[in-house]
Structures are given as structure tokens and as C-alpha cells.
Image (cartoon, rainbow, N blue to C red; front, side, top):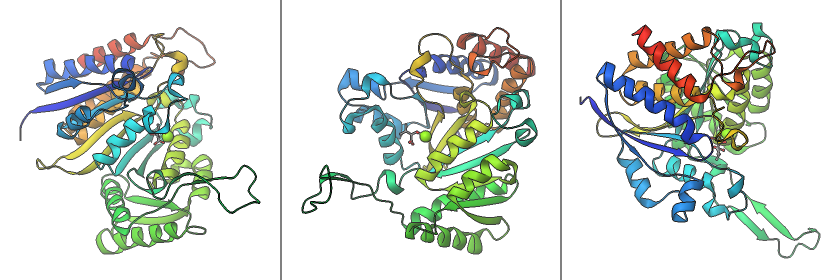
Length: 375
Ligand code: IPM
Ligand code: MG
């Protein structure tokens, strides 16, 4: 297996470019010190791509993403683009990447770093040591289902306003089975427990979801412990006693919502990475896109306040899932933990005890220093 990898970096909008600059330092460190050769290419996505080309993702950039060993994305969107037509909104660039690369399994770990347990809105004893992995289906469901649109509601005189908005929740058994397999595989490397969430009490697609996840379990993963929960109860249980969960597998829309709730348990959205994985390519590695869970944060853009850790930890996931460098991924995660344990904090991590936050660039530098000390 080759030791050279290609990485397409798409910093995007808002704080995306700022946090990506810190990831570059980390990539350079692994190149210099660990012989990891990554050919980095950089391109536009989101609002900045719209400004340059009139589209949030050009075909040329899409082709580069398809060809790369991995894609690392910063963030897309911002108030300047709020009134654009739906078809060219920054988010469409991201959704096109997910759909055309067929990245059906979105891994969103919610891990509580001990040094940050007091930042959670829940009590320390509820979140300390928390380690949940949400596996969100990412290429189907109501995000992509047809029919969709806003139409005149003809022949319905009782509809004041006269329009109807439509989206469709649609899942095939194959789409459910493949994401279920991803969840069971991951559970085997963790605590071996999967909880599947849907709304089988009100939605046929939820009934199918439950049946297919159970089928995959019974036929292929009987050794993994499987439970089912209605998604609304799942939301409640996540804030009541989150430690009951190991891997949660759920659809695109419920996963979007539940992963934001799980993220907040850990104290800061600025800490959370994600990986979106597809089927294996010819080289045996999955198609993959890595991105921090936080958005473009227009309110702090350009001020050196952004926390680069989520993006740096997304690169750690790339080390693990795309570059076969599990040990390097562990090393990078330990460096982040060390820096937090040393009390280094960006503005989003400042608690009641006060202190002086470090800048985005200083946080990056401290993590690179910690890498040097640990290696
Ligand atoms: C996410 C975001 C996206 C989503 C938006 C930006 C399209 O909220 O990745 O969770 O809804 O999937
Ligand atoms: Mg979201």
C-alpha cells in the first residue's frame, strides 16, 4: 500500500479558512516527523465558490473530490448568501459532495474531554467520560426524497395563502441495510452496542427502518447488542442519561438534530469532528469527506477567536479511516487532550473562572508543540 495520499482541502466560508490554516500546520508536522506524504490540493466550496463561479461547487471541484483519497472541508454559508436562490445556496455545495460521492455513513462522535466536563450544560457526573458515536444516514431520506418543492395548492379554496410545501421521507431497504452495517462494524470496535432510532409509531419509513436494522442484526451481527428507540424518546434519553448509549444509528433528518444535541453535551461545538464515508474504492479505502460539526460562525469570523480543534480532530479521523494511520490518529488526539489539560483555551472554552483565551493560531501552535513532546 502506498504511503502517499492525496487530500483535497475545501476551507469554504466564515471561520473555515482560519481553522484550516491550523490543520495545515498539523499536516506539515506529520509530513516532517512521521513520513506521511500528503499531496494537498485546495479549492473552493460554498459561498466563496458562488462568488467566484456562480455555483457553490463547480464540476471541476466535484471531479477533484471524487479522485482524492480524502476531502477535508471547513464550513459553508453565511448571512451574505441567505437570500440566494435555493439551488445555489452554499449548503447545496456540501449536499452535492455528500450525494455524488455517495457518503452514506456520517460518523459524529460526541466525546467529553475531562478538562471540559464543566462546560457542558449538564452536570459533570452525567457527562464525564462520555463517548457516543452517532452514525447518521447522509445520502437519502427527506433531504433528497422526491417529490419536493413549493407549489400552488390548486382547487383548495380553504388554503389561505394558496401554496403547499412538500418534502418526502423515502428509504429503500438497501439504503438502510448499508448504514446499519456501518454502525454494527463500528460498534464491534467499541462497546458492541447499537441503538437504532426512528419514528416507527407514526411513519412507514420508520417501520421499514426498524425491520431492516433488525434483519441486518439477526443475519450478520447477532453478537452486537441491538435496541430500538423512537427518536423523540432518544432525544430525551440523550439529555437524561447519555452514557447509556454507545453507537446510535439513525436517518438523515433525525441524525442532524440528535447529533447537535449530543454535541452540546460535550461542552462546545468547537470540539467535534465528523467523517462521512462511502463504499470502499479500488484501493480498499472508503470514499471520505471530513468536516468539523460546527458551522461557518459568521459572528466571529476573521477575529482569531475560532477554535480549530474540531477541524484538527477531523484530520485525525482522516488519519484513521483514510490513511491507515491509527497510531498517528491516537497521537493527535492525545496532543489535543494534553493541550486542554494544560488549560489552553480558545474563547469558546472560557468558563466562569475567567482567564485569557488564546487565538486560533496559538491553539494550533500549542497542539503542534504537544505533538512534538509526545512523539
Ligand atoms: C450538518 C448541517 C447540514 C445538514 C447543513 C449545513 C446542510 O446542519 O451537517 O449537520 O443539515 O446536514
Ligand atoms: Mg446539522
